[in-house]
Image (cartoon, rainbow, N blue to C red; front, side, top):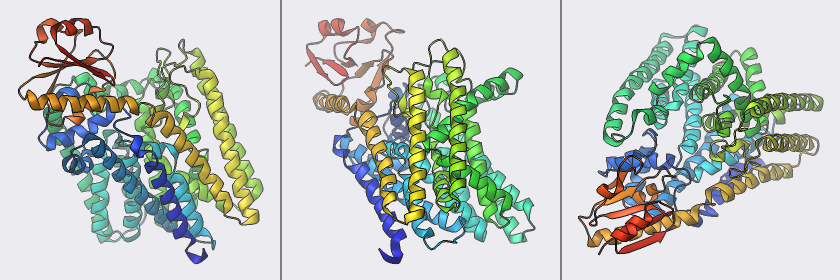
Length: 583
């Protein structure tokens, strides 16, 4: 393999990623996560002149930055299945680029004092990027995979700006940072971390006037674009979410978090926040098999000892994690309350997953670079004991809850869901199994690294890769693929609706929403130009809202099937829907 081992291992990592994303793509027909994924397509549809606002109103506000990426996919591909699969391919390409960017970050920021360092940096980059959670998100149109890419890109740009302080690097850093906020407003922590890092850097050492000027340019651009974002937000709400309630929109925007911040500032709020902490900390450790902790310890040590510009990059890594962790605590404030039933809010990953990859890669490098075997075991045992303590606190919170947090959604806590059964969650038993399993993986990784140090054989990295591969396949089979046959049925309903609309071009389309999962989004996705109206039978009388000239869709188990069957001659059932219409 010679002197180009790093390139070979990067290539192997990218090849594994392609295989994981493509091996079952022909079984993926549409959305996995409802209603989130549809919310990212809706702004793209609006930019193309389609009005999906009535269906969009069934979900919350999901921002608009990712829609810019989805826009050309939606425009140039007409078939719904092909459109969705092409979006996955785009995600996969950005995921692959992330591996290369992460490798260059490690090469730049960690001192080269080993002939095998380039190879180890490539392996660490690939291992971190093949995290099962990230791979799973890549196989959907959730923003999480894209956020992982953008975070690594921001880290790369921050490192370049700190190194050369050129205006163009600073402007790119500012633009990508604000764009990441446009992708999702919960990335507010990234804006604060970039600004704080540059502020610390500006006052930390004596700088040239040119460097200070460029830093001020970056700060000015970030602040200006952040203020402009409020105008864009109002425009998006008016055009796409005009039928959504303010309470629903408040869940994902900044305005809806203000009252939580006020509550946190009280004594009771601080105590609640402290109770929320163990679950979130445990997730960070378990989702990375403890490698985040290895990286965190390494970063703290570098901040204390490093005197060059690299010190400020490590400060950025620390501040960006703490900033996003703080955002997660605010958004999910009160997750540990006795009245809460949702387990994924207690052990939440979606809001923090995207900042874990860099620190996870650094953690694996730190483990590989540690020369003393005894120190390796000491740190590993410390991380295990710390995780077990966090688990015990989590246990206490779960056991005091009358329902034991029995409403579980693994899609929001992928990094802690190997043993989670959403349909029959035995949460107390699940927790200890999950933690023990992931700590055993940490022990296996530690043992493999020690074996590598003694024998210098690269075969141990194949075993480490296998851990990620099996995890990604498990999530694909149990989360992404489990509902795709029904999604295909919904797409057939969408195709049938297209055929009917060709014959009855002026027919109104009506959907009876009875507070079920928003599978109607698949039908809308397959009928881009259709204007689907929605009524809420609990609030409106169906008999007055429906007339025989309409095309009416309802859920297959709707309570109105008998009434609709009496009023319409034709009935078409497939997937999650029944469609009624007259000739």
